[in-house]
Image (cartoon, rainbow, N blue to C red; front, top):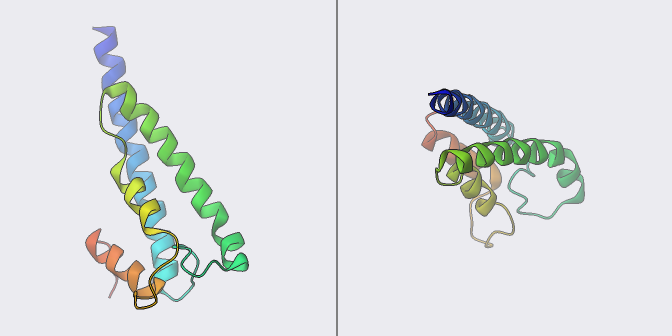
Length: 114
C-alpha cells in the first residue's frame, strides 16, 4: 500500500510540474508572439540565444524532472517538450517568423490572447 501511495503522490507531483512547464512555455511564447525573436532559434542570433538561454535551460530542467517521474511511473516521455525542441532551429526561407509561430503555438495550447 505504501508503494501505491508513493506512486500516487509522484503522479500528482508530475502533473504539477507539467503544469509549471506549460505555464513557463506559454510565458515564453507570449514574449515571442509580441515580437522578441530567439525562442525558436531560427536566425542563429548570438544575442537572442544569450537572452533566451535561461528560458531554454529552465524548460529543459523541468522536462528532465518530468521525464524522470514519467519513467518511474512507466509513462511515455514528456511529448510537449520534445515537440517544442523539435520546432527549434533553422527554418526554411519561406517559413513563418517566430512571432507568428509562437501565436500558432499559443492558439493550439488554448492560451491565445486577444
